[in-house]
Image 1 (cartoon, rainbow over the protein chains, first blue to last red):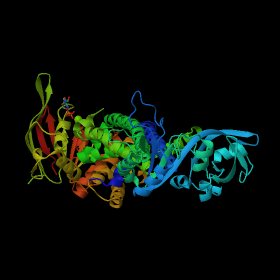
Image 2: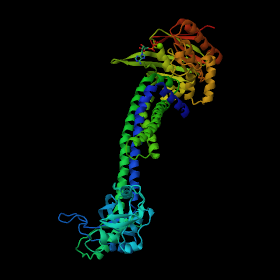
Image 3: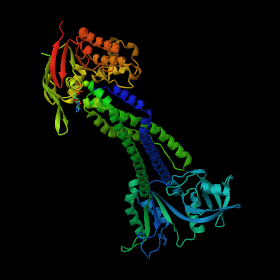
Length: 409
Length: 229
Ligand SMILES: Nc1ncnc2c1ncn2[C@@H]1O[C@H](COP(=O)(O)OP(=O)(O)O)[C@@H](O)[C@H]1O
Ligand SMILES: [Mg+2]
């Protein structure tokens, strides 16, 4: 049998002998591989950026808010009947081991004024546990002290968007802003966070002590009222398994009889994150598969040309057989030619794909991320396409009878 | 034991509803070291016979023994091995690979014999020297004259040290002067290297180089004469 070096050289010579045809044949593979690379970069980019956005929302996150779990006709919308108290959150944190932290949240959109500038943003009453859950550090200044909470102090911590909108280049630290006409001292500024997984600007918010929100800013209908409690579970599993415990504890605290429905809803954000992540994963697979179809079409192009080539080179095959080529030698030769064509196409396709990704980055707002496995896989795939579609022409060539092949005009 | 032994070889091709019989029962023996010319008019079946002898084609009936081995019992890969190791071909139309240098053409049978690159190269150069073409090693067939191309083909037939060389009208496309050169090469290889040479021709003066002349007319052997020494 022929050695691989010689057979590769024979294949390369045949490819070079017909440069124009070879390049056109490879074009299908080039486009296919490039398309797969670009598509996977888009899919992977979406996956990574959503993952990163999700991370900024906090991990192992759950939310408990007022409202009924069923969305029946006559019943009011979610949260229409406020039932949750900040104390509910404290109880959950204290009594349920699977819950690490519980932060009360009472929020309202208000106009914030500084000097002549004003800006409508969400005023969130909470305490420091909120920043802990979100793993959100201060850019400078301080967060709420115990006495701020106890005395319902008029202090505020600002998000970056609010700082930009109200202060421009001015240092906001120690300045006074007005919320609902009341003066608040800026004690700190948070680091920039960007959008959350739902596309909301997390930096467009101001934070005040929960007690201040309850007593001075937001009108509440019963003492200690909140919109929701934000919970952080000890791990991902706990976000599922703690739900029953939370539910029981709250039913007891809210004095719900056996026939009464829950007056609160527990939402598992971790589950939502997982769903979003798996859907972007599906997106990546989908984009990759669609692009792979063009690779297959490229492979069919190779098969076509190889079939033509086998017919054209019948005499060559006859000569080779006459001087001792076995059927396997002939098969190997044409198979190798198809493989080399595909791999050359694959290599050029990688380069084209990488350039394509850079161009897409320049002209679109997509996040494209190149992951090396997503470059190597299409290349290997192109080799497989060569084997798959090169086999039939090679097999056909090897079946020729030497005397007929030699006489072929 | 003779090198080649044919027993009542027949070959026919389908024609319309019936068959056209080209070889009508050929029996002959050829010994190691002979220089044989097969003569006959065009269409008499010389090439058909030659292709069967060269294991390129199979007879419709009859038995063919090469070195005592019955060829009809071999599969296509075994036949390829025999063509590679026992037989060298020289065709009327040269049958060199185009766009391939002379030396690479000569190396070709050794590639299929699994001979290493260095040895292949050395032997090919020697074979080209033997036909006087060492200066033209890197020329491709379209850069060579007919006579030179045929000499490359002869070098290719020679290089594997196959004991038998089949030549089908090797001078058919050559002028008289180069024909003589080619025939002198065959004679030399027969006399000096002991190669068995079986030559097909319809030209009397070419056949005269051989020691034995077999005349085929209409698919049958009409005469089989050895030259008187
Ligand atoms: N594949 C074939 N099918 C049908 N007839 C053939 C085939 N090959 C050869 N023949 C016929 O066989 C006859 C002998 O051909 P050939 O052996 O080439 O003669 P020669 O070499 O003596 O000129 C010719 O009449 C030719 O037409
Ligand atoms: Mg003939």
